Length: 81
Length: 171
Image (cartoon, rainbow over all chains, first blue to last red; front, side, top):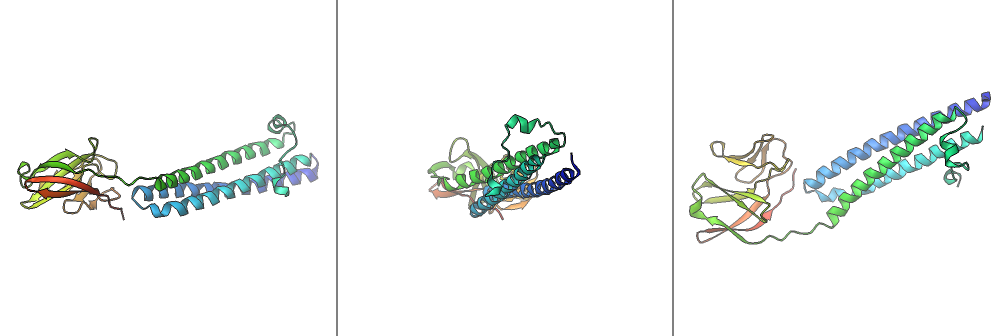
């Protein structure tokens, strides 16, 4: 691998690791949200269910966006070979 | 938009088994990301399922059912019965001469059967030491998240008739 490509490769990996860390954080929030929603719903508080579903959907979209970002960097790195 | 362009024009097998050794790190990260995103989708589906359950929950209809005669239960005694269906256990308590109260016998924590502890005048769950007030069904101690569902009683002469249930929210 050329030195220039090696640098691009390393930068790409750093960006992917950052995106991965963000996805992991969002996933932990989603897990907490699901358990908290279920707990509240079973306790009879169904008013929290709709906002929780919306927030969970937004978090999923954020994760999907980050996944597209990872794919993009991945593709760019391959094109540089 | 560049972000939504197909990730790679190469066939999938070339993606997964790249001839470039350095690409392997990319492959493992990309697959891990995909796994995390699918898990995220699962979490969202879970929340959506709870939402659907709450939207399509039917309001229960409770029948009127004769539970027992007032003479059947001595002061400080209990009467076990089934209400509203044969699968739902209930407990009727007579703490004093003129008072009759009835609750679902299922603990609101993990559904163990509660019993009346006469000497302490409370309903107790033997599984995790959840205690409930006899007067109101409220949680006095322990892990139960909400009060016991109260069975509404009507006295018709000597007969005690269950006419409905009050399911209360937890705090």
